[in-house]
Amino acid sequence: MAFLLSNPKKYEDFLMPITCLRWRPTSSEMKTKNILVATAADGSVYHWHVTSGKLLHTMEPVDGNQFYCLDYSPDGRNFALGGKDYSVKIIDEHTKSLINSLEGGGEVPGHSNRVFSVKYDQNDPNMLISGGWDNTVLLWDLRAPKC
Image (cartoon, rainbow, N blue to C red; front, side, top):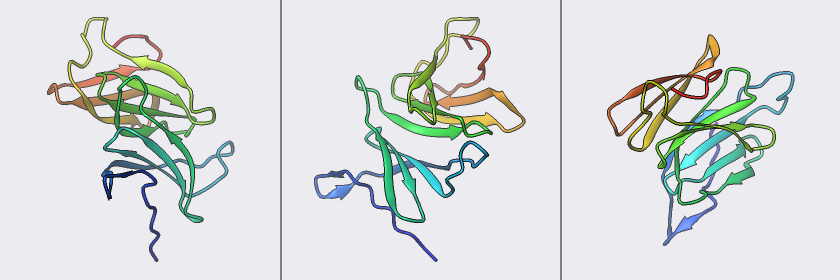
């Protein structure tokens, strides 16, 4: 069995490449199953219901930022986005609003180039790892405002 989820935005007669895919975790709060979230090369974020093929939500790039990667917290309440502006954004899954922007400023300066990988620790929802073009891997404690 296969499903075709077409990218709803066309760029000069071709679809924008998809840069990352993640399944939204299901829980007692997130009952709808088969939600696939993707980032595209233009920086957009798409939420699809795979079973119906319906596009549920689109997040467009804001202020020139583009998102290239994402990962969900283990409980599915939040997701992290990495992208062009050298920061990691934590987004509320329900409202799709920004919770936090992870940037340097503590003992570690943060990323100095685009972020292409983010991953939550599946055993500790307060820990997140990011990596990017600056050849660094940063471990973030979400309970602290800085890296």
